[in-house]
Amino acid sequence: MSLFGKNIRKIRSVRSLSQQAFAELFDLKRGTLGAYEEGRSEPKIETIIKIANYFSIPIDDLLTSELTVNELLKFRGKPEHDDLKAKPDICKKVPCIIPEQQQDYIQHHTKENFIEDLPEIHLPIYNEADLRAFVIHDLEMSTDSDGFYPKDVVIGVKVQKKQYPNLASACLFLVVSEEKVFLRRIYQSAKKFILKADHKGIEDIEIPYTDIKELWEIKYAFYHRIPDSRNTDIKQQLSFLEEEFHKLRTSLHN
Image (cartoon, rainbow, N blue to C red; front, side):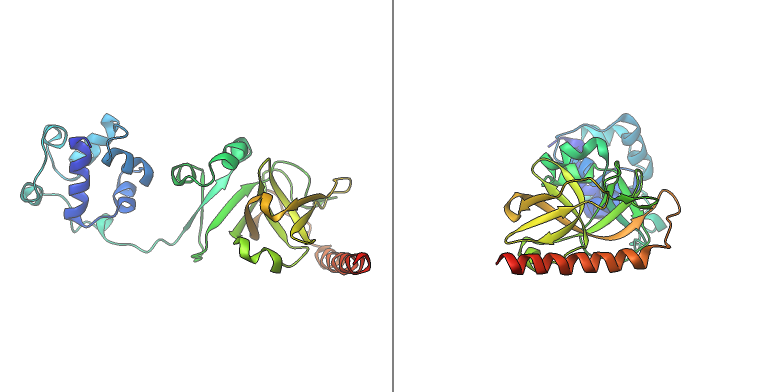
């Protein structure tokens, strides 16, 4: 661990700041600050200057000597500054999967540092669930002038594997498979899902539960345009009928 990293960690301890709170003071990501503290990365000179000025610590001391608690208490700092007080976060920060990062997401979705570096969408909602945003880039979930179009954004709540057998059919999900990230309506079929697109001509995809890396139930949608809502009730009725027909076909085959 570098002296700079040790000093940063000690400053946080003295000022009772979490990594997240300290990082936000200087427009850093929490993962970046963690890398500084562990000596895995070196900060830019601009960042060093900001931290030194903020806490009134000589740059030379910050970089070349291990500061003691007594020394840190002597420095003026800003312990009562509004920025250091715990503030309720009125916005939920939601990691967002963009088209250019889909393959990287499939490979690295379990890595905390990768998720932290994804683009974020800030929503004025209070939701403690794990959320994921997805930027639509194709027409697979569009129907005429309705549905989802490129640049629309959907946001889903994570679904645990034990919940898969009990999920309602015809609902919209973000499905992360071993090869692709899909936005689809799902239908149950003996330990696997049938993924259906809304656009005509797109073939259904069957995928076993075991081939699903992540599943997110869509709860919010943000349109890049003003959607035509005239057919909403009709679409809901058709989805219900389609689900009932699917159940009927399944029972006949069994």
